[in-house]
Image (cartoon, rainbow, N blue to C red; front, side):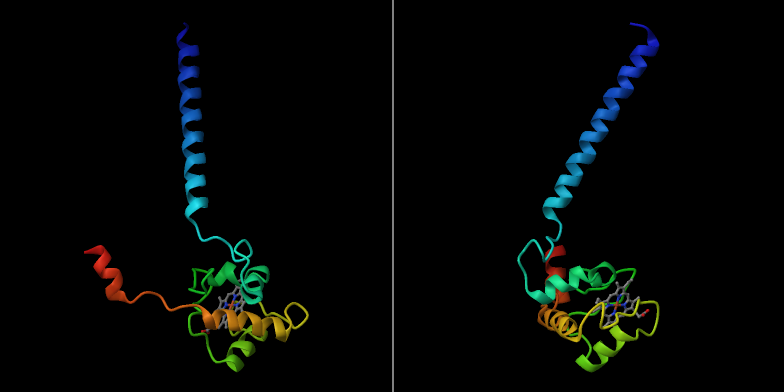
Length: 129
Ligand code: HEC
């Protein structure tokens, strides 16, 4: 077999292997990642939290991400919470009542208020020990 063909075949084998690895990793990640509230048939508030895009910056559990601060568990008092969503103090886009009604915002607030607190720090430590 000519050397060029050998090299080509080796490269093709490597590419196939890489594709298989990526596919396997993707499946694994999909299987273990947080399943969306919509898929789980969750409360209206949880669904709105996803549909209105809050989760994109604040994370599925409101835990905060590089794009948005932590807003759960124990969200701010309702009045403050609602005022900030209508008129954010920084880079968050404002949600007008046409984009998100007061009733919908209240559903989101109730959802965030029911999210459990994370495990205590020493509970996590004991797993690591
Ligand atoms: C594009 C990203 C983004 C989206 C989408 C977004 N937020 Fe925010 N949110 C932020 C950022 C960033 C802050 C921090 C304040 C700021 O910079 O405006 C914030 C702050 C907040 C705060 C105040 C938290 C505090 O302790 O000061 C609340 C409450 C809040 N967001 C609720 C929501 C809700 C509810 C939604 C969906 C309806 C939402 N956010 C959608 C980025 C976002």
